[in-house]
View 1 (cartoon, rainbow, N blue to C red):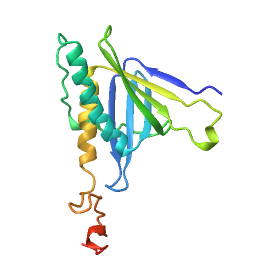
View 2 (spheres, rainbow, N blue to C red; view 1 turned 90 degrees about the vertical axis):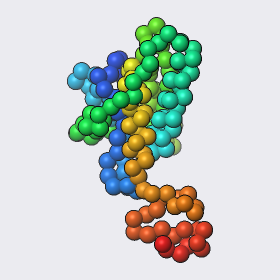
View 3 (cartoon, rainbow, N blue to C red; view 1 turned 30 degrees about the horizontal axis):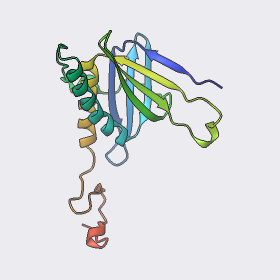
View 4 (tube, rainbow, N blue to C red; view 1 turned 30 degrees about the vertical axis):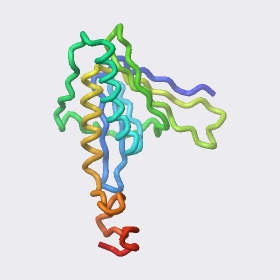
Amino acid sequence: MPGIEIDLDPVQYILTDAIGQPGQRVFYIQGKKDDQVITLIVEKIQVQTLAAGVEEFLNEINKRYPNLSPASGDYKEEDMRIVPPVEPLFRVGELGLAYDSTRDMMVLVAREIVTGEMQNEEANVVRFWCTRSQMLAMSRWGAEIVSRGRQICPLCGEPIDPAGHFCPKRNGHKH
């Protein structure tokens, strides 16, 4: 059975956000075009990787097309918050980036994660078409919300649970 394919071309906004307390947050990507709002669930590491990947990809675009005006990564925090109701279409398994030089537009392609029970079905796909500035602002905000999570233990590199941290470098002693 073929999956759903949705193109938001172009988006009015695209953002990534998290809901919940650090250590229990759920991360989302949300985009809007006209009356259509698409919300997808992503993993924290996907937001983190996307943020780094967008910066790297934009550097490559700037090298390849040196006459482009620079993208602005400026954003207002209140504009980067997820818009309710939060009804995710699917959980993302794979993210990809592309650039259309004729339109000077970037596209973020989100493909649904395929689980065991879905092996015979095609994954759903959403394409968020946006400006370089929209993508850069989304990625910088994504990096910011990831950094607002739990503190990292300097000894073992694992997140510190607010209820206490059993560090393997201290033989599991709570500190």
